[in-house]
Amino acid sequence: MKLKSIPLLLLLPALMLLLVACDKGSQRDAPRRGGLSPTEIELDSAMKEELLALANNRDAWFLASDITTEALEGLYGSWSVICRNETSLADYKGVVYERVRPWVLEMLKMELKDAQEANRYYNVESWSSPWAYVEQTWKLGDKIVLGPERQLYLIESGAWRYHDC
Image (tube, rainbow, N blue to C red; front, side, top):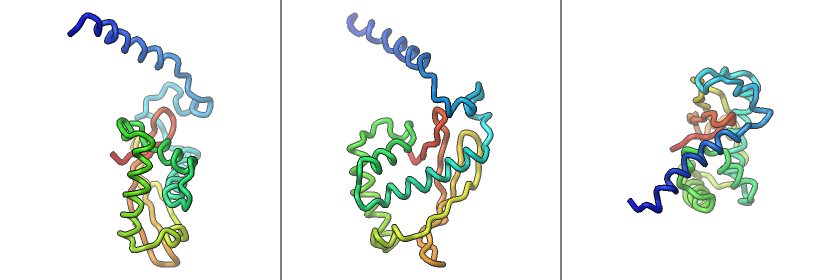
């Protein structure tokens, strides 16, 4: 190893410590964090409501007719940091909207507009902090067109994130 790279290697842990030390979190997250480890968090009604709203928002962003910055950033921002480790926002857009969404619609034998008209239902199936399984079902009238499917979410830094990696 070259002598020039040693100071860089020593600088990296110092920067990581500085970032962690400076992260105060948001006021909204204070009750959740409150010195509890992720495995000690209780699933209260407000957290459950946030989780189910996120599940619904993710489907709305996924099914958006116009792929806006808001929809793309909403999906990407609600995706687990662990999963997006090496995936840029631009790469994510291509995968989700050019490959995954057409594949899902083909699997469902539906057009986008028909999928958008489906009523979407979500239920927290299980909770084991920091992980939660949400059951997702899409219906057109009485006919189930998707689901029930299980989606895995976790709490990262006080916020729910979708985990699919």
